[in-house]
Image (cartoon, rainbow, N blue to C red; front, top):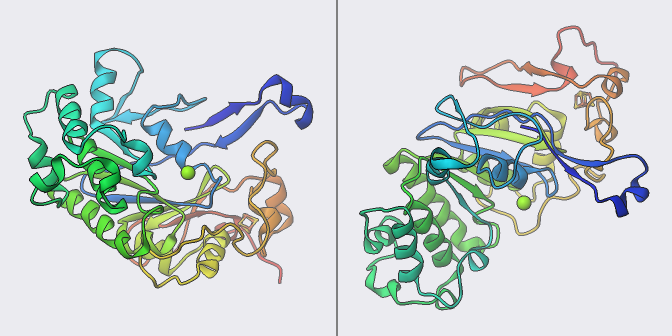
Length: 323
Ligand code: SF4
Ligand code: MG
């Protein structure tokens, strides 16, 4: 998937001849039933845009979204079926719930839209808000942040989805309750055989929670592999910096602050992204070649826990690193 956002004419003069923000560039990923795929990146790396593309809330500039191998086309009955199967959970549960309506209203409305036989009580039980009667007549402001996010998840489940796209689902919650919500998602993965995309800036929580981890940098996936491989044996220099600059990589569902200065330096402008490897201006291993040619996905020596790759010239057999 590729997404370029056009720059408005009025602003264009400020950015010379550039006409678009290159937010997402050839991101290729597959979600699978019963698995959590984490997408880790700094703010501005394009991770929310990937989720919105997959949910088809925005249209891609290039590429396609497939469901069971079939290209998804917008509009029509089949598109509505797609939207039912792929549900989003947003970062801020307070913003995604309507303050003037009760929990019961939110859930029964979603159930009615999706013509589901399930009851609101059953949905609340699935997200461990029990006994359900205690929560049905509550308004969003009467719930804690964690309870609100559980209601938002329950509402997503009303559609009977096959996939949940969770965009930083715990980053606005108190540190003390994050783990509970992540455990709930993991539990739903197992009980409902859901495919989950877990978007986060917190690599420690990805390690705890995900079967597969993808690292996004400046709109491109730079490393992928099992959670174990990517977090314990990080291969890409950017992933290593991300881990080194995480306040406490061992803490689960950890940090308050977003990592914005991994290893020093800022994420690059996506209006004029650096040529070659987009990470080269910040990379301690950059070679002449890195400024010229974008590296392809190259396999990293694996520990028998599935494919592990990095988009980095260091893993090219023909590269001899100086220094
Ligand atoms: Fe660094 Fe070059 Fe690898 Fe990019 S391709 S991460 S600049 S070594
Ligand atoms: Mg975001």
